[in-house]
Image (cartoon, rainbow, N blue to C red; front, side, top):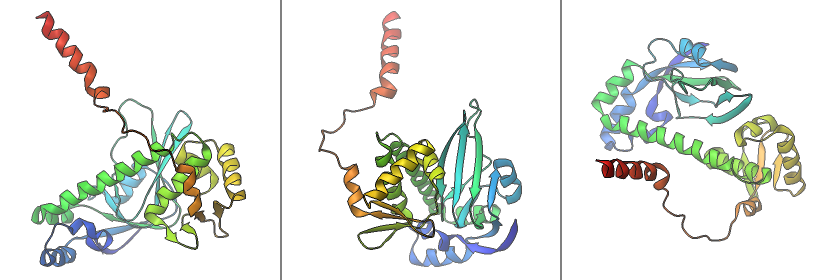
Length: 263
């Protein structure tokens, strides 16, 4: 671990200042700085990462450069999601009080993170809108995890792989030819963790997709995704789903009605 120069948070993630005036944005960009820590490649457990970031890491950290794989392990199965520039990382948070989960952070290449401490708190006190933008950033992270969970429920491995790569392309992809390059060197095993599949099943599906020229692994380990692959995700128009509120509130409501009837 090495400490580097300070980073300007609004340069890393300009959306944090979206609700500021132009003059406020310029001033906040100048003052919203945080010390950066460079994490060398390797696996980090939550305790080691918290210790590396130091006691001044009151609010966690923001990824300034690089990609971090966040793994949760339970019962011999691993679920992975990827964090990148602008994402918030709070290693001290326990994922569960009751489940025997193991939390691991994987860094493939040297990654810089900005430590959010007292200096960041002072900036938020002056411009509370930045705190609101941070909540929005956290909500987008949660939504990406929810989308990935939905992808893992698709019926076929071919669909899950194509959906995952388009999901990653939304954030990291760049157009090339009749498709998009996803410049991430995720291997077959990593894809299996990202889509909740078995390694042999994922490898076989990638072979089928390659034979159809829909997904190609490039020489540098990144991926090219052909635009026609989206046809695997097409579906017939369907009626809007029925309201789902009863899944959370129906039983509670009936219980309350029954209690009222007994009084």
